[in-house]
Amino acid sequence: MKTLVVYGTKSGCTKDVAGRIGERLAAGGSTVEVVPAEKAPDPVAYDAVVVGSGVRAGSWHGAVKKWVEGNASALRQRPVAFYTCGLMITEEGKAEEVRAYTDPLIEATGIKPVELGLFAGSFKPGEFSFAERTVLRLMKTPEGDFRDWDAIDAWADALAPRIAS
Image (cartoon, rainbow, N blue to C red; front, side):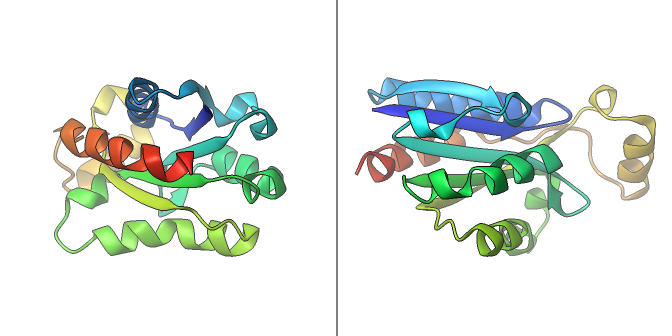
């Protein structure tokens, strides 16, 4: 089984999550390639695809959305899972709002993901632009890495048999 993990990130947080998901799927027996959306990988060569993005201003990264939209036909032909990384997930009652960030993309493309993952992100000021740091600090965003690697591992491990079928 060949699995493609595509991601979009600005700060690098989602790249690390994509890599971890790829490692877990590979440990489960899949041949995995982890590629940024900007490199425009062709999903046709894969049996399953996992797509993830960090969020900015309530939206997935443009490169990821463009890649998904441009490959929607191929993606509808194979198992696909989406995941979102973001700091808002750490806030009480915000998980459903963050999960809904994928709704416009799902509706526009007709892709029916087998799974939707939500993972907390990180705020390391040096990885954000001055404007982003300013906004995040005004919002009183706590600094640190809030990714829950055990939850990411569990999600990827549970996903493996779902995309293999």
